[in-house]
Amino acid sequence: MENRISTAANIDVFDRQEHLQVIDALRGYAILLVIGVHSVGHVPDLVWPAVRILGMGFYGVQLFFVTSAVTLLMSWHRSAEPFLQRSSKFLIRRFFRIAPFYYAAILIYWFAYNMSTEAFSLKLLFATLFFYNAWSPYLIPTVSGWTPVPGGWSIGVEFCFYLVFPFLATIVTNLRRAMVFFSISLLILIGASHFGMNLYPELDVTDRSNFLYFWPPNQLVIFALGFILYNLIKNPWVRQRIQASSITANQASAVLLIAMFALSFYGVRKFFEWERGLAPTHLLMTICFVPWALVLILKPTGYAINSAIMGLGKVSFSAYVLHFFVLRYSSNVLRNSWPFELTGVASIAFEVALLVVTVVVTRILGELTYRCIEQPFIHIGKSITRNIGGAPW
Image (cartoon, rainbow, N blue to C red; front, side, top):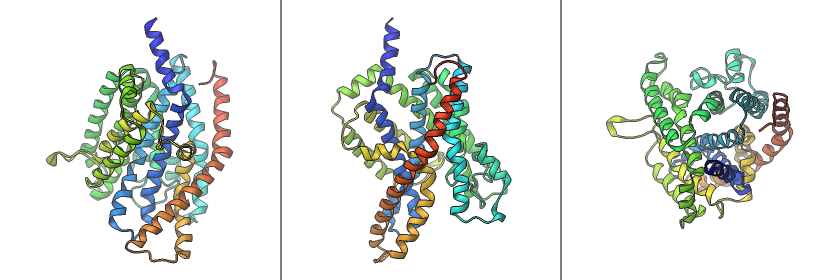
């Protein structure tokens, strides 16, 4: 009886509206980070301190991965259906959540970037359509070639995670098991980066390292940290300690900003550097994300959680897919009408203007595609799962 009450209480942690809104806020911050880092390429003369800080947006994708793991576990544990039935529903709903707009984006970018027929590759198209594009440097690509959807590597990694998620969610059911999963995934990261260096010998070291950073074995540890975050949130002792503490969401956010600034001097390290005792930056950054997200979810008050960031997070998938071409066109328009210098300190003003315009336009377009494409197909996915048996979750 006590266990059933405890389980119900754990589920209630995620059913409260303010906690669900924090998940949207986390996604909103993730897309802001991603837009920030990608904006740097459109301001070639941006002063180095700004480049250093915005470069930390490189790890916004990892915040997406952590948040994704938490939300998937939330949904998974709301159902008590048999494994096969629950898994099939999960994969169907994930497909209709991601694939339709992702596929539409292939056409959007083909015309938006005015691609030539010579650039078309059936191999790249199939890799994108079936989400295995993160498994080869010629499919992401980290080497020159057509990219059907910019940033599509992360969507491919995410979908690979979906395929193993039902098994992981069934096995990793408490904090101790989550720690074991993290340890195993850490070993996978180390092994993949070490033995992966023998793959694709025709590539130079930079291209090979870029690929080994993007591919799924190097990112699994980030999803494992999401499992740890989920189990920390539902742990009664942790909840009581955090909620009784004086730490606030605003304070936790300030600490995170300080940590990000400090890590900006650490450098982009894709793998362990054993001879210097240095860990990968994406792992360290995600470890910083976990306690910050924990505080925000358990104490969802303060300026850090606001309607603007939650609204952006609600359409974050559309925003992620669209922001690449929004940045390109926004930078072109701004550059042609900008009345000031684009170098030195003045470059910061241009960068700020570019970020504001891009975020606003991306938010508007994201809302449109979310309502017109994402939501209708989400409803289709739910309708299909109803026919499998039992209520959809």
